Length: 563
Ligand SMILES: Nc1ncnc2c1ncn2[C@@H]1O[C@H](COP(=O)(O)OP(=O)(O)O)[C@@H](O)[C@H]1O
Ligand SMILES: O=C(CO)[C@@H](O)[C@@H](O)COP(=O)(O)O
Image 1 (cartoon, rainbow, N blue to C red):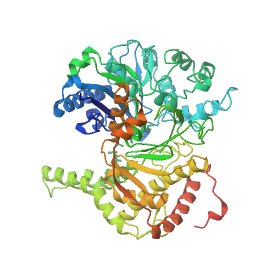
Image 2: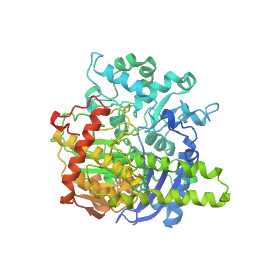
Image 3: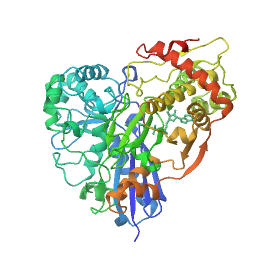
Image 4: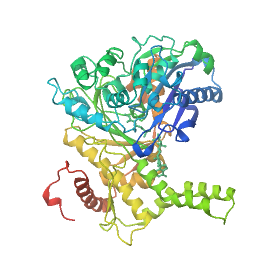
């Protein structure tokens, strides 16, 4: 008998669903829906790094994408056995006592503090600093030790503390907070008991400092010292967490009707996009899977023997079962990857966006067409020109920290910088410098894992940039001096979510077997070009010098000061 599963992947800008045949991993249908309100930049203020998303964007996206894949695949809906949802993270949402996202209740519909706080929202830098100071001074165990020793403003507690202080009405109306992957899973299932709802191990371990060593979330005494609200909130959160090979519940009657599915369909425990992406790309021990899109997430799995209780400095957490149950999942990443190039594109588009409007040379339709054409071509043309520029020490040097630094050693206060500019520097030179910067940032992550004794035998690239930019992938292979395979699927995180759904539905006995059988194949491999590796090494030294200048906490050896 045929069995099908659906993976639903919430990215930064859009949500996609894939419907997968569990026998062979074939994608029978996929559909993407962009968030309407987010696209119009509603509820955001980039000048203060405030990025919020309205839950209606997510609910509308869920409904349309799932309905579409079920319809387009033409499969019998009763054979859709499971669904798993992955989302970005840490992207927490305030929720009322009856499990409603606060922004869907009266009076809070337009309040950004009542909405989902997107992973890249950095409004809580001060709160993250407070958590870090307290973690080493409160008298108990350092609760940041399994999240790299530094708590980030991208994460759960810092964001909640910030909003609780800023908005009394939101604080008073909120019963609990849920990671986005948990909220969307909870929305679909029949059982609405918030106390017994199965929260994601991946989200809890990487972002909320949940760890078996202290029996769950950080101790009440620790949270109390940050803010009494957090101590109260802890009681409305959770003690246990669950891996995504497990069932969170059955599809509710309401959602079965809305989606055209059956209440027999099981919903797996939610997870994060990067972790499911790694599963979709057939991750194995000591393989680094890099999810390269707006940001990057770098995922590794290690055995209990290799990682055990050894703590890895400056990464985004090591969590038992966050990728594959029975292994420790390790996460690192860059707060901006494609986003650095997107920032540069937006900068260069300024005259087109703003001056064109004041010109009488073209009519409004022509202006709009021109804007679209430039926008579509800009990165492509810059890439072509940048590829022709030799790798030499006369190139500008840039830092990738346009949205702070996630790894190694999270610091969201650091900023990007560009040096070595001259009158001869043209737009493609700066573009090339930015591409080099994101690759050097990646190299620092790989170095950190290896310095800490976590071996990396092979590298796999997935995500928009891995698929769309051979230029960046080749640069990365040269900078890392390692071959990089690219997963063939355009929807690897959604495929990974489908794999979890297949295990939760009992179609496969475990994640490893399912991932090897129906995970994505590879359709490209980039090898280091030996003649270029040395030249990139020299530029890397200049990148390290600029890093140490921009962030005085970074120490580099004196003999590297050669600029
Ligand atoms: N041809 C390209 N070369 C380099 N970067 C690109 C290219 N096309 C898109 N990007 C970057 O890819 C990022 C989007 O990646 P994607 O994986 O599609 O989305 P998400 O991160 O939201 O899942 C954007 O930051 C964009 O700047
Ligand atoms: O940080 C995580 C997961 O821990 C990601 O959700 C976050 O980087 C967002 O990923 P995208 O760049 O939108 O794919």
